[in-house]
Image 1: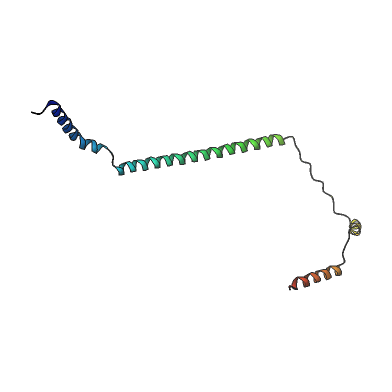
Image 2 (image 1 turned 180 degrees about the vertical axis):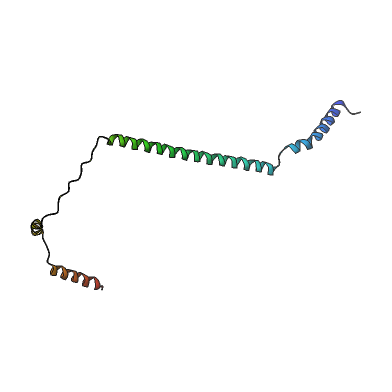
Length: 127
């Protein structure tokens, strides 16, 4: 006869083997785990991109609000200011033009032409 403890152990072993295939079927395979991991990674990446887009949109709105506030401040500050009209002076009379020409140094045309000719000849004479 088989002892009671041996019977219990055999019964437990049989029950464990009977449950074994169903328990193995419940554990996901490596490909299923990889697919789940890839799906979670893609979801995280999408969430990160949405967060960045929201942050950028917030920054743009903040900059727009600050710009509008500064423009409004400039408008209110500038209400009391008036820029004076420029003062235009008429062209000098011909007598004044002659006087001004006499005050400033001048170079005769023939001297300017000679200087230009020397510069051109020097620039052509490359050694």
